[in-house]
Structure formats: structure tokens, C-alpha cells
Amino acid sequence: MRTAAAYVCIFRPQRGGGYTVRCPAFPEVVTHGYELEEARANAREALELCLEVYQAEGRPLPPSDSYRRRTVTELVPASTTRI
Image (cartoon, rainbow, N blue to C red):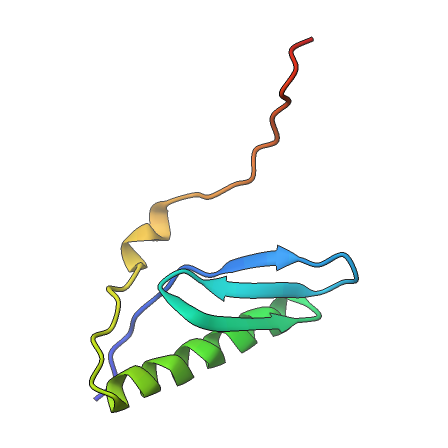
């Protein structure tokens, strides 16, 4: 039986191009992609594999982050000096 879950992933642009992806709920998930779509697909695959391993080992799954769908996360630049 499959259940839907959603987990927050962090996509960090790399200087040489592409994105590194990490998932706070699953520290072992680290992947990348040259384009954002590829990074998203690789993140999903890595999460699904991690979920399979957790289930096979009988480990409890972290709670889904699906409640965060309405949360907006943005990078807001700030200066340490006032003008």
C-alpha cells in the first residue's frame, strides 16, 4: 500500500552550474541536477529510495511536511551596515 507524503528539500545553486539538493527530514539524502527540473526528479527518486530503505528496516518515517505547502520560504538579503 502506497501513501503520499511530501518533504521539504533545499536546492542550492552551485557556482559551476546545477543544484545540490538536501532533505532535512532525511539527512542521508543528498543529490544534484544540472537543471532545476533534473534536480527535482533526482530528489524525488532519492526520497522514494530512502523511504523504501526505512520501511524495509522497520525504521519510523519522519512526519510528512505537507502542512508546509502554504508556507513561503524566501531568501531575503540584509546588510550588516546601515546607510
